[in-house]
Length: 338
Image 1 (cartoon, rainbow, N blue to C red):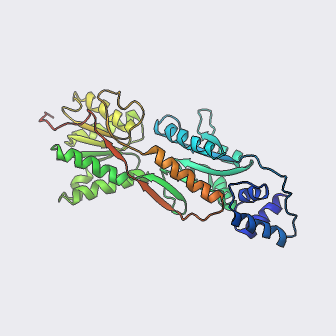
Image 2: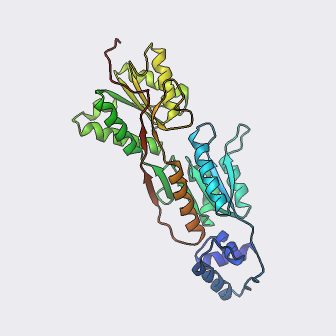
């Protein structure tokens, strides 16, 4: 039957999961797509299903790199709730300390009635080469939320990193900061690359040579210690404010500033990105860019549902504007010794 399903899917131009749902009368399949599947059955000489057959809800993989970064659980919870409301069954897939990887979960999902996958902060690359090929061969509906890599052929929902940097720099320069550092993730991290591009465009438009603003860009792993170490380098370069690519990096930057005997925000201003839970309660409360998690989850689940119904969804990135949340970690610059 497996081979027959693949034949029907190929002839109808849909995924095997869509064929299963069409055969079982799922409301997730549009009448037009269901009719294409039925015509494929007729052409291939296979019987049409009886009207009494019903379908159990398909599994939807919700893949996250880890649960340490607070924004990942926030997205997972928002997406899972929206999937449940549509009668779909979310399955949380995340790396574990005992060595279970995203690839292991994808392998498991491929052996089940998988309806689709939402990758949060990750991409095909995290699925593993063999699993990634299998997902494409079976035309599994996929949506990427804030992917870390380039995925030109996939449907993507992302925060507008560039606009977030522009908002933050406008705020800091309006307070008088003239030398602002940017602290982001690894150089091959796509959201970080977008932030760097916006950082460069902002200062270039104000006449600063690339060599000057380039020296104010720091890279670090997304961790407190990574943020602390990289921030100390930016402070030695004379930065009076640091724009960070995540709240975790921002908390690390505050730690790095304090190691040098500096006060935040009196001696150095620090901003984050995400507006994770409890950022209003840290010392000092963190100025940060809030991702619209709910609206992004709505868009991701709708794009997945459209694919599951057999509709064509053009690949590309849909960007969502963030909101700059002003708190106590930013202030006007004050003279300080080196």
